[in-house]
Length: 263
Image 1 (cartoon, rainbow, N blue to C red):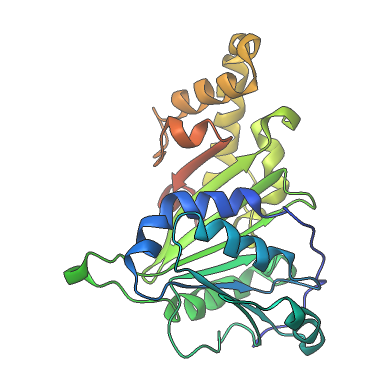
Image 2: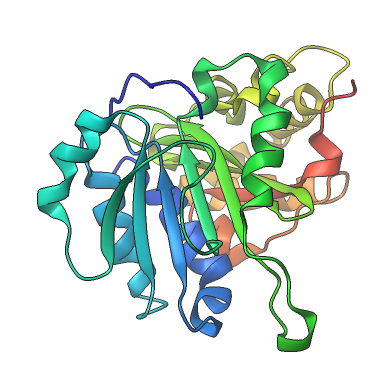
């Protein structure tokens, strides 16, 4: 289910997303007996799936990755890279696996779709996630869907659980950032057309730019210190869900409800 993407990819393109997943979802992956992750729509080359396995195994040694592509030729080209813990399968949004995965990563997949199609795709993918298990303390699976530039300097993604969207994360290479609103061009499909006056995501980026400008004196200590100060100021008006440990990585995560489209 779905359509073939352009398939463009580069090594290390998704490193920011991968590191965030390992940091916030690593405990859930470690807790599982058989933690399966899906790299959905990995593209014309298998690099992102190979890298995802490596990064997940630093926090969850039993993790397995399945790369899923809708183009059979791409699956055939990736098969020589299979090894213990890494497989490639033909498929799409139906996620054709025997068991529900603990993670589905869909990076730069929905950018070519209409905004009106996003909610249905999210719902379908969330329905394929491993369900919560309160008795075992398991929160359930995680869908991470977002967009980045060609070399992974700027990235914005939405994290969703089986119940739906939870958070939005903005991540950037701070040395290349002029202002936080530069990230607007990498908003995921659900938000990119909502960066207009009257929409919450527009107000957030406006406030972020103002906080960034106010934090200009901290630039003398480096872009990281300026970012941390700007994000700290944002917490007065926006539900920032992470802390300085993630801010230092050039990230900030905000509750989805605060940025969700008004209609």
